[in-house]
Length: 429
Image (cartoon, rainbow, N blue to C red):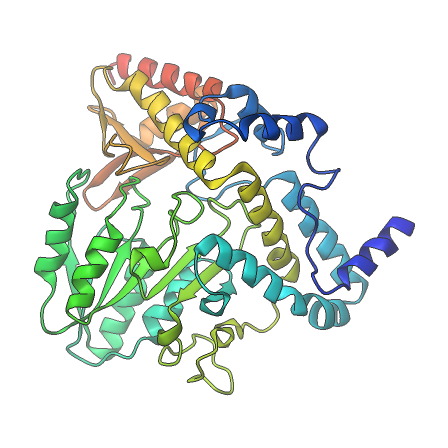
């Protein structure tokens, strides 16, 4: 009870953040490891299994299954889980008091921390629940009229496609579709495809920064520059790039962006972020209206009613964990893991990739197929025989199994994946 009261008192303080690197989160051994790798180049650390073994210990992942579908949703480190539980218990002591009078005031601390990760002003960041909510705010909030054109690709995420199609059905805007033949190594080929689709009627272009089906990285800044030459607004779907690639929202040239923090940041399930360039806030309609929908305050996009404050506040611990590992070390590790398993299977007969292996054009996500074997059969064999969980992808012109490791994934996990792929390919059917 004494420690409980102490926690309640601490949560009533202004900062409302759990301490980074507190004694109960990181063991003395891990802190020693962090100190050791601080002097090393991220590329050296990428293959250091001792260090990443300590990272793995921060997670509570099952020993009965190898999860290689982190592209769907990622597990949270134990410190994030513990933070959410503590805040949840706090809220239940007196919900309306602790939620609205205490925790609600802590959003500004979190906004500042997320702005640091996003490389923008805190006045350009709204906290919400996922990429769909963030991007739907933009899709339904931009003023468009019948005949206005929006350029997007058939490889974009379905929820975004459906939102644009609803505007097309209701308001008569025109959707202009690109059908990308992935993988593509040449930026100019992608940029030209977008540029050739632009007309005098184009008002918006949507760019999926990392195609979720295959992991292809699109040259967002180059496309955005071409769009802005024509006064076209740029919407960035950063669901799979935020806290995965090391980038800033302003550097991509986008006017609007959205991401899910429960993917690569390892925040609690149901955590997201909306980025709106400061000068664009005033004219973007909120999805959930308040009493002044035309104000230029980013907080107008946070009128969600009752929300999960424990989820919001535990995002802070996820951000601290990400920063402790280091964005450059994390990026190098994710690239290393993708290269580790693809190098071992690329010469196996019938194994083909739907993802470029160029490290500048893809990162952790990679999609493969085995000629002559159905995608769903590959996925089910991986799960049933080898206990490897993956994502079967059949979408537009993409057909294959997506493999998505994360920072807790070990090379021994990937050795089993390689063994499984070889045996399935050699089975002949």
